[in-house]
Figure 1: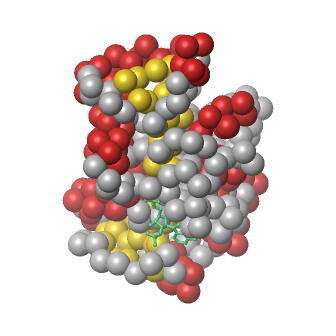
Figure 2: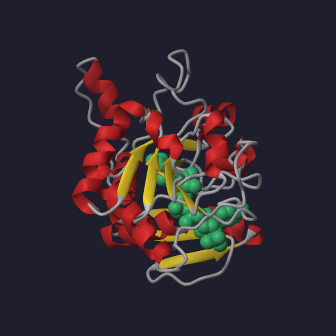
Length: 313
Ligand code: NDP
């Protein structure tokens, strides 16, 4: 019987996880990292988000480390992280559907400039700002066409947007124009009335979104960041919005998180901030995914969302 130790979300969340696993995988032995008796027996698998330093030595002997996030940049950057242990990212259908729903909401918010309605409502102003532009007339471009990006792209195409995507390796995705590699980036950016960032944070992608980068977009484009805050040079983003290079931005991820109350992003009239909530599946759905990963590894299979330490995602 496989034994899973959970440290994700601290001791206070353990009962929620335990109940979730009891529903979807009653055969799995589930223990809290924080229970004193847990440390006397080794784990087969661990479920983590941001382990504390003293947690890392116990991770080096397990069959896999499973992360409650799809982004694992914070783990790979930790000096103590045991890179020889398989690291599996969060997945599952609800995670992908939530991301597709969020990006659809954000894209339509930008298309209709919904931020101006929120500002008008806050001070009781009734001003007509009808925008006569449909999804079918809008090109949306997704940076990062991996597990989440592909699902988002397919969903947006179904909604009616004209969709393109950018990734490292060439591939085919029905209904989506795919651009691959660094050389294709300028042509890809030209297709973006709305640009979505769904890249992982790696040394190659960190700081990618600068003022100059944004000037490659059609003037007045919208920007959605659901990747990581460190992809974006924040002062450059604000300048691009103030100069009209961009018409609006929806930011689910920022640096730092939580965003300090003093940040200029909060009150900017062209920015909508959400607190890193785009895609967090329910504990039961996450537990179901984790249980499937463990079952497949116990059968000797390789999980689909295994992180490649060489690539950094
Ligand atoms: P994947 O690893 O499945 O996909 C990453 C994609 O990015 C791949 O298509 C990859 O290309 C592409 N890519 C990576 N590096 C480059 C590069 N240098 N140039 C061009 N393309 C590149 O990740 P997921 O889709 O599962 O997740 C993506 C990110 O979304 C996570 O890393 C995380 O940061 C963020 N996220 C945010 C959440 C939120 O709530 N805001 C929730 C979940 C995730 P290729 O396919 O060729 O390898």
